[in-house]
Length: 199
Image (cartoon, rainbow, N blue to C red; front, side, top):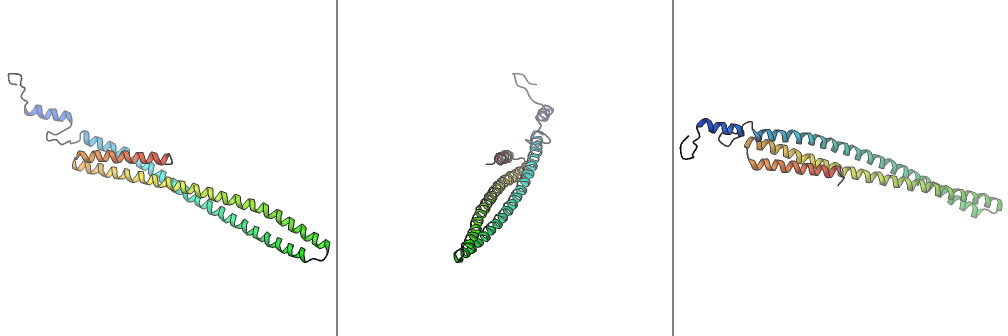
């Protein structure tokens, strides 16, 4: 200690001050704030990334399931339209037989078949159109799930980049890399929120 209001630090005072701040006296941070901060960030982001990866896998599985349901409905609709065509062919043959018949009883009998086939065709058409609408709905749901899957995958990728930046920041002790790490982590979380909101 010197006079005149000046305080002269001894070597032990300088080291003690930096130890309390988590440094080593040379601007390095051994086991202190930066290391702990990056370790905590990495653990949190890795956990969030695992959740996002799970959600991405679930939406991809849903998309495949919905696409399969759409294919089944399309096949069923196609079968109905084939059935409709079969009834149309029978109706045409009944109309031909009616027109070629000389007896009124035969004409009435064939007309009854024509009327029956026309009614059956109407019922078949309604079923086929409903199946086609169901197939379209399943396709739309599949597309929505794939879009959401891509969002989850983007979020997971950005979080993986954030973890890589964290490792580099820890090794190099560059503050700008730490900021980049936080920025990438925030971007990944925002993309994940967009995925959760189906955006």
